[in-house]
Image 1 (tube, rainbow, N blue to C red):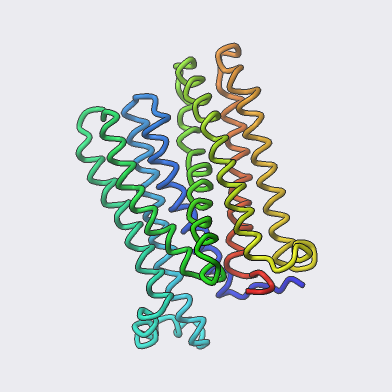
Image 2 (image 1 turned 90 degrees about the vertical axis):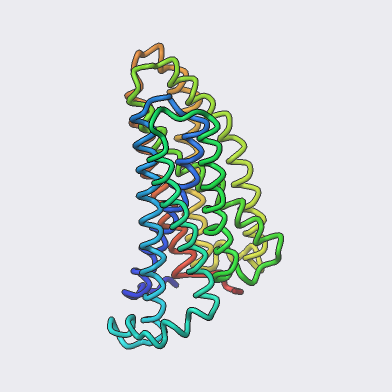
Length: 302
């Protein structure tokens, strides 16, 4: 049965949400600057700001979560978080290694974004965005590989842990692109908007295939028996997450097949803007379910 999360677990869950948001903003934001850019300086500034905010929140979530784990191990209440001897000791453990990797990734993303922002005196060219994507890709890999060393994922096979990295990137690129795409809907150049949205819709098909394939591979490794999907708390929350993902995919399909083709005809992107907002709410719920699975409840055999 489900247990009521403790204050430590809830705090850790919030930290995990910040971590996911940070990873998504780096992957999705840099991808959109490269591939789905309307050529406006204002768009560039807002998306760079979005990446920097995500990197900061990801750093904050990682930093706070480390001390939450210190307090959880100490079991001495709030003051246990600030046991510096214990905190120093844990830096030499798997928890310390994971924390170092994540902090490095977020610091690299934040500082590089700041440098790129200051370097871009004029509107950047494609080579600039490719370089930004490469640097942010390295930053993202630090964060992504940290997931292969933490929790129940760390005991999986090498293939499954590799699948985790691809799954995380596909999911992060998808959900992290939603805010930049929402910004694009404010454009008055409807033909360009339609073209960019169609490009995203076409490329998103590949993202969904990677997401589904890698997710299925991970699930096969995590569950000892398919019956665990409907007999364990982990399975129930996973099915809820799957339902929310299907809802999100349905909204995305409506965007691609109905709302995007009608942008020019309707002379407005208002309906598309509203739909993207609904999609953002849905993926937020998916992130909460994912954080719950990775923080509070785990597979029966792990």
